[in-house]
Image 1 (spheres, rainbow, N blue to C red):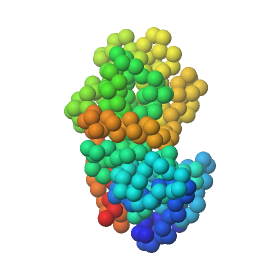
Image 2: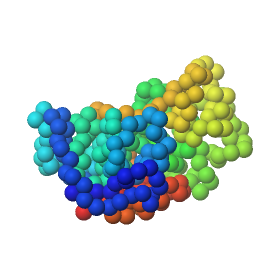
Image 3: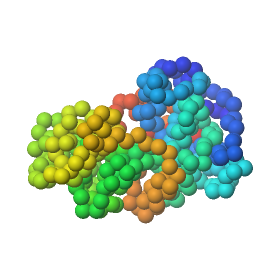
Image 4: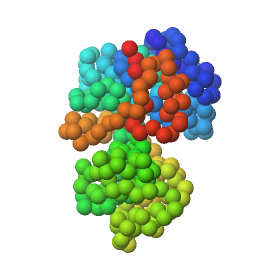
Amino acid sequence: MKAVSYRAYGGPEALEYGERPDPKVGPDSVLVRVKAAAVNPVDWKLQSGAMDAIMDVVFPVVPGWDVAGVVEKVGPAVIEFSPGDEVFGYVREDLVGRGTFAEYVSAPLRTLAHKPAGLSFEQAAGVPLAGLTAYQALNRGLELRSGETLLVHAASGGVGSFAVQIARTLGARVIGTASEANHAYLRSLGAEPVPYGDGLAEAVRGHAPEGVDAVLDLVGGEALEASFGLLRDGGHGRVASTIDPAVAARGGRYVFVRPDRHDLDALAALADDGRLRVDIAATFPLERAADAQRFNAEGHTRGKVVVTVA
């Protein structure tokens, strides 16, 4: 099969496009013919070696965890899917090696769900990692409830934009931090925007004088530090961060996304109901995956960067 891979840690220049062996299909796995795979910051952070301390890597590595495609074959223990089914998923395994930037990926059953019918393959590929992060942070990390006020830091980014939309479906009011250029975008998602930087606390208090009920932090640093002081009395540390594990020492929750088929089903239902919007910033063919990584690493995109496979 055609795939993109790297033989040693490095930047986008380490990626090679060429032939790789077809993946084997284990008893609990599904062979997916890849249509699209989204780029996430974790892809190039893994590739740089920044996560070597926590992830075992088997070189050469095919990068990519997000996927949307069509079932080609199922393992003998799989009854949930059949050849021809359209699926999407967050294909993270315990070992880093066989990712989604390829014509085929062998995906563990737990990482896949049926693709939302209302989304294109490109849009569906953009949902899993970012969507699951937002969904799990709000439902498990913060246990957000209807009628509450949520503050989201970096609300216009990949995870943040999903968090705004999911929180709104839960019946929450959302205040979101973003640059001025993204304020109209946040309003279109249903959030009340406030600017980053100096005066953040005062800006949030201008919308919620008594404080907020919960905070989702996606940037860390000063924004996270300010979050605890913005909680409504009795907030008891209802701050979740995807950036800084030290948040737990202050009574908050550190969130690291995990594959979950049932959570993917919930996201698919929201998309099919028209309550989850997926914006695509750019698409690149598989052979230009290095360019896709560079574009994603610039950090100024609104929407997902997607690699497409013919």
